[in-house]
Amino acid sequence: MKKLFVATSLITLGLFMLFSCGPKEPTDLTQTSFIPQPVSIESLGDEFILSSSVTIYYEENVDGLEQTARYLADELNHIAGEIFTVESSNVTPRSGIFLSVTTDNNDLGKEGYFLSIGKKLVGIKAKSTAGCFYAAKTFLQTLPVKAAAGEKLTVPTGIIRDFPEYEYRGAMLDVSRHFFGVDDVKRFIDFLATYKMNALHLHLSDDQGWRIEIKSWPKLTEIGGSTEVGGGKGGFYTQKQYSEIVKYALERHITIVPEIDMPGHTNAALASYAELNCDGKATELYTGTEVGFSTLCTGKEITYQFVDDVVREIASLTPGPWFHIGGDESHVTAHDDYVYFINRVQEIVTKHGKKVIGWDEIANADLVEGATVQFWADVENTTMGIEKGAKVIMSPAARAYMDMKYDSTTHLGLHWAGYIEVDHGYDWNPATLNEIITRENILGVEAPLWTETITNMDEIEYMVFPQLPGYAEIGWTSSELRNWDEYKLRLADHGKRFEAMEIDFYRSERVPWGE
View 1 (cartoon, rainbow, N blue to C red):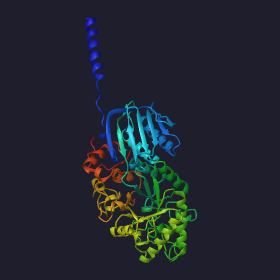
View 2: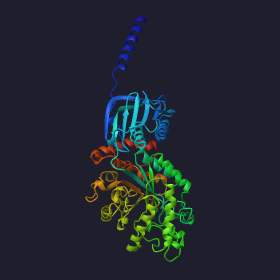
View 3: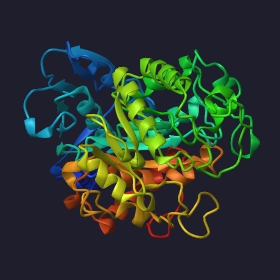
View 4: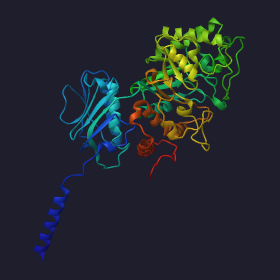
C-alpha cells in the first residue's frame, strides 16, 4: 500500500511539473490602456519582471537625465514598496532599465521616444530628456499605481514608438477667483505630468485677487491678495513659493505660463493702488463673479511703469518662453485705448525676453512677432490674429473649459458655454473645429479651469477628472488614432488609477467604469 501511495504521488508530481512547465500564455502589450494613445505599439508576447534587483541606468554626461532616472526610481519605489538603485553607464547594460538620448529617430521630434520592453532590459531612447520622461510615464502605465503586498509585478514585452501631435499641451488653473496653495498646485502639476501635458497656465490676477508677490508694488498682495470670491481670506505666493512651483514643474518637464490679466479683470490691482485708476481713487475690493467692469487707466504713464515692474519681476522668476497678458473681456476700455495699451504691453513683454500670449481679443492690436492668440470664444478675433501672423492655442469654451458643468445636475461649475459631458470634451479635432483655423496655425491645446465655484482640491479633482486625460490625448495623439468608443474603454480602466491616486472624480454614465 505504501509503494502504491508513493507511485501515485510521483505520478501526480510529474503531471504537475509537466503542466506547470508548459508554454506560458503570451502577453499582449497592445491591450494596455495607455492614455494618451501612442503612435504605435508592437507586442512581443513575453514579460519583464520588475523587482528590486532591477537597476535603473542612465546615460552618462546627459544633462537632466539622472533626474529623470531618479524620478522613475521614486515612482517605482512607491508602486512596489522597494528601493530601486540608480546608476550611470556609458554602455547599454544587459539587464535592467536604461535611459539614453540619441540623435537617431529624427521622425520622433524633440519630445518623442522609443520604448523597448524586453524580457531582461527595458530600453528608453529619445532625442531629449523630456522624451525620456514621457517614455517613463508610458512605462509606469503598464503597472498598478500601488502594488499589493507580495504582488509579482510583470510588464508585457513589446516596442512603443511615440511622439506628440502638438507642441503645446496644457491646462490652466485659475488661482485668482479662489486661491490654492503650493501643495495643491503641485498636485495639479502631477496630474498634468501623468498624462504628458507640458504647460501649466497660472491665472495669477483678476478682479477678486492678486496672487503673486511683486516686491516693487507690495500692496498688490497686502490688499489685492486679501480676499477671494465669497469673501474668503484669499492668499498669494511669495516669490520664493512661486519659484518652488516653477522648479517642481520643470522637474516634470512642464513649463509655467504666468498670466497677469489686463487692462480688464484688474480690480484687485485698482483697489491696491489708487494711481492706477483714472480718477486717482482706489476701488473697493470685489468678491463677486461679474466680469468686464474694471480697467487700468491706459492714458497714465504710471500704468506702464506698473506693468513693466510686474512683468520684469515675474519674467525673472520664470524660465519658460511665454508671458500671458490676458486681454479678455475689457468691456469698459475704449477700443482705441485698448489697442494702444496692448501694443505697449507687448513691447514690455518682449523687452523682458518673453513671447506674448493673450486671449483672442488681443488680435485687435498690432501683434508682435511670435505672439500667440488663445482662442476661447471669438473666431473673428482669432482669424484676425492668424492674418497678423500669430499662432493659436485652442481653448474653445464649449469644448475645453473644465469649469463647465457636465450636465444640469452637476453641483459645481457654470454652464454659460453649455454642458460638457466627457464624450463632448473628448470628441473634437482642433484642426477641423473651424475651417479657418487650420493645423498649420495651431501651436497646441489648453483646457482652462476657472474657479468661481471651486473652493478646494476635491472640487478641482471632480471638475478635472475624467476630462483631463482626454484633453491630454487631444494634444498628444493624432486625430486618426482617436475614437470615443475605443477611448472610453481605456478611460474606464483608468478609473482604478484615479481611485488609487485618491482622486475624487466624476463617474460619468457614458463611461463603462465597471466594478
